Amino acid sequence: MFVIAQLSDLHVNGTHRNRARIEAAFDYVNSRADGIDALLVTGDLTDHGSAEEMLEARKLIASPLPTLITIGNHDARPSFNDVFRPGTDPTAPVNEALTIDGVTLLSADSSLPGERRGFLDDQTVAWLDTAMTGAAGHVVVAFHHPPSTLGMPMMDSIMMSDPERLGALVDSHPNVAALVCGHAHSAAVTTFHGRPLCLAPGVASTLNLPFEGSAVINRDQPAGVAFHMLDDDGRLITHYRTIPGT
Ligand SMILES: [Fe+2]
Ligand SMILES: [Fe+2]
Image (cartoon, rainbow, N blue to C red; front, side):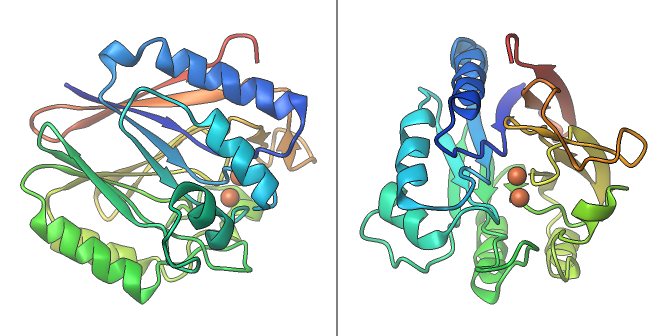
């Protein structure tokens, strides 16, 4: 069984509260690293995408696991590239791949500079197509913005725009076993073009469902992590855990 840990929506903002939750989440994952094959961090690393926040994020995103980092709408390509990928074109989309034990993980940039909604630009769609075509085994695709509605009106208004660009890729690549994302700060599972679409809970906070309260953000819920297990047939089983002490 191939095991992927996924943490999302860290929202580093210089506060002790968020830092403590992020540290606890990484401690929870890292102390179990022997049973985990890879870590995905799916965006909103920071609150404002500033250089200071990105430098703090780099310190906090520390794991012995092979790690892929996605950016979200609260981040910014220039500060991410400067801190995490020095020498890269500052405006380049953050698209990275990792193949471990025959499983290919693709982390795609769904951020749209200056906007809260998401979008897979032409460069990213072409990169995904090439990577999916070249993968010898199962593929798991990570990005920040959900490509489908979630029954969460505010988030649904800032989901991935034109999701059929991703849908066409999924349709033409049967080796895509699952899609994982963040953004909605809610442990949620649905399907997209017949594949599992799993959302990681938020580390920083949870977003209320319409019947949970009038406030959008719920800071009382604990931080959480998703553990995605992929079996040899490419079937995904996702387990969610809350982080003790958060
Ligand atoms: Fe977020
Ligand atoms: Fe987001």
